Image 1: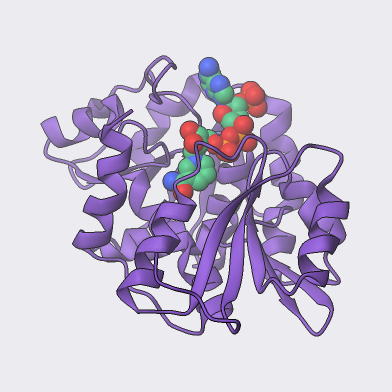
Image 2: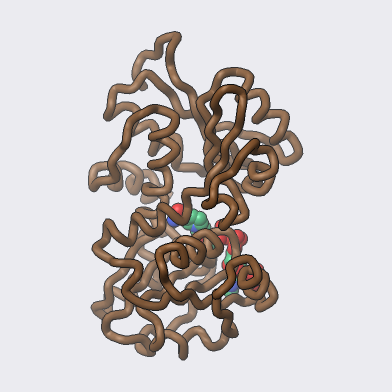
Length: 279
Ligand code: NAP
C-alpha cells in the first residue's frame, strides 16, 4: 500500500462476514496502479448496526462504500437518494457520500452487461433466459431489459420469480423444470443461482438443447470455471465467466470515490484470480 497523506480518500466494503470479500484486493490493485492517495478497507459491520456504522463513516469523511451481504436492503433504506439502477434492482451495493448526503446505486447489472461486452457478446442479440430470482438475477434481468432484451426467468420457487415479474413488467416466467426445453428459444442463458459454486451441487442443465450460437454466462466465480462453463466450452459454445462481472461492477464506485476511471484487464483478472485459486 502506498504511503497516505492527510488528504487520502477512504472507502471500503461493508458486510458481515466480510473476510471472504475480494473487493479490498481489487480496489487495492487499482489504487496502487494509479498511485492514488487513498485506501479501501474491509468494514465488518454486524446486522442491526448498519445504519449507525454508515452514519459514522459519513461523519468520519469516508468517500463512500460498497455494500455486500447482508446489508444491501438496509443500504437502500439509508440512502438520501437512489438512482434507477438501485430502484430496478431493489437493492444498493454502492454508496457515495457527498456534502453530508448518501447516494446509492446498484452496479451488478452494469457489471454483468460490461462483462458480456468485454467478452465480445452483444447483449441485445436475442432473448435471455435467467436462472434464479434472487439478488443477482434481479440486477441481471433489469439490466438486460434496460438493454432492450426480452427476459425469461426460471426459478426453483416459482413465487419468487412471479414477484420479480411484478417488479419488472414484461418479464416472462416459466417453470424451473422447463429451463432445458426453453434453451432453444434463447440466445443467452445466465446462471444466477449458487449452483456450481464450491460447496454446492452443479447446475443440472443439458446444453445440447440449445442452439450452436447459445451464449452461456455464469454469475458464480468460485471456481472460476464452473461445471456449466466447462460443459459450454466442451460444446464449443461461447461462455462468459462470473469473475469479470465482479471486476466490472467495481468500476463505477472506484471512479466516484477516487476520481479515476480504472480499467478491467488481464493483469487485474490474474491478480484477483490468484487469490481465488488459493481457496
Ligand atoms: P440469492 O439472492 O441468495 O438468490 C439465490 C437464487 O438461487 C434464488 O433464486 C434461489 O431460488 C436459487 N437457488 C438457491 N439454491 C438453489 C438450488 N439448490 N436449486 C435451484 N435454485 C437454487 O443469491 P445471489 O446473490 O443472486 O447469488 C447467486 C450466485 O451469484 C452466488 O453464487 C453469488 O456468489 C453469485 N454472484 C456473483 C456476482 C458477480 O459479480 N459475479 C454478483 C452477485 C452474485 P429460491 O428462490 O427457490 O430460493
